[in-house]
Amino acid sequence: MTERNHPKAADTGRAIVIIGILFFVFGFVTWLGSVLIPYLRIACQLTNFESYLVTFAFYISYLVMALPAAGVLKITGFKKGMAAGLLIMALGTLLFIPAALSRTYGLFLAGLFVQGTGLSILQSASNPYITILGPRESAARRISIMGICNGVAGIIAPIVLGMMVLQDADALQGNLKTMSTAARETALDGLAHKVIGPYGLMAAVLAILAVVIYFSSLPEVDAEEEATTGGELPEKNSIFRFSHLLLGVVALFLYVGVEVIAADTIISYGASQGIVLSTAKFFTSLTLSGMLVGYLVGIICIPRYISQRQALVISSFLGIAFALAALFLENTVSVFFIAMLGIANSLMWPSIWPLAIHGLGRFTRIGSSMLVMAIGGGAVIPLLYGYLADAWSPGKAYWILIPCYVFITFYALKGYRAGMPAREKA
Image (cartoon, rainbow, N blue to C red; front, side, top):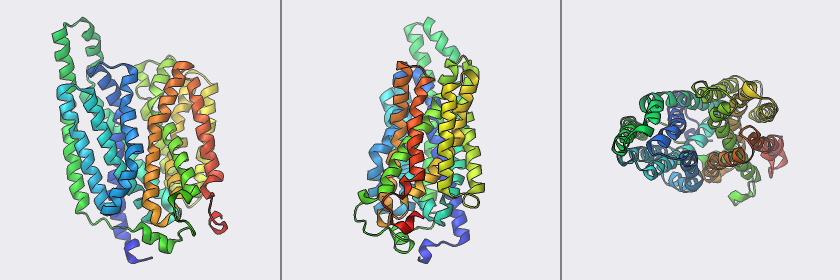
């Protein structure tokens, strides 16, 4: 492998710090949805179903835009592609300003979709980049470090934005019923305008970070060159002949779906179990804290004590066990096991990603984009949960988790090596 693909230790350390900052940005932007849903439900006077289009608009952008992102990266390379993704995110964030001024829900959703588009490019670039940056066997460990950056941002972001835009929102919602039409519109406009400051600042930070990345010393790694010396799987002339990748896309699609369910439904589920909202509103942070614990375990144990595939096996079995516990137990204990899914989910992304892109060679960028498309599971599977929650109950709807974790278990045990030559299966 050439020197270009093997940056010096100091360069690698700097690169990990820079990519860690990007993953912090991913987490900060991604987990703001937990605040935007109740905020926009009040400001734009939405039904519950309409408010959950926040999540759909954001995550569906990955499914739609991930393949175009591969084309962008083929032209720009990883580093410039990351800068382009940040600029697109900044544009999407700026759309929140006219959306707030006009209190137009469609513009908010458009801003979320554009943000997701930028994140599609960033995810398509940063995930294979951090995988290729060092030895393959320790890729899950590096991605776990990135997960900590993502998770910390996910805990901080809702608290910060919530303090800015949801202060006195409960009182306002109660007062709206007694206000005159003119006073009601004025009050809702005032609530909508609260988002202008934080999102204007966020757009500026994203634009500055794009410039910093563009002019940084971030080493450019060549995925195709990596394959030439790193063992591209033979006799593969189409991305669709990599069975382990295609199964990995399905596994990642299901994983993102269960991750979003564990984080975004636990507050409502807690309330359905008789827990007051003033307490239940902290449950998402419990789930994300569990993910941080899992990431720390991954950093310590992978690859020193367990391989990333073994981590995926353990995680998938834990997912099944915790989900079954939540289904068959009741009240606070059941909610506790939904929060514990954060631990089970934490090492799935870091493990599935390097297993799925192994040996793709010149198809690494397009393969990475297909994996990013799988983030669309966060748009589809939670909607299915919502349908089942209406048809059955919020508790029984968690049965949707079981087949998802079973498939991930299959991938960890067998699917990851589908279509590989015998020497690669060992």
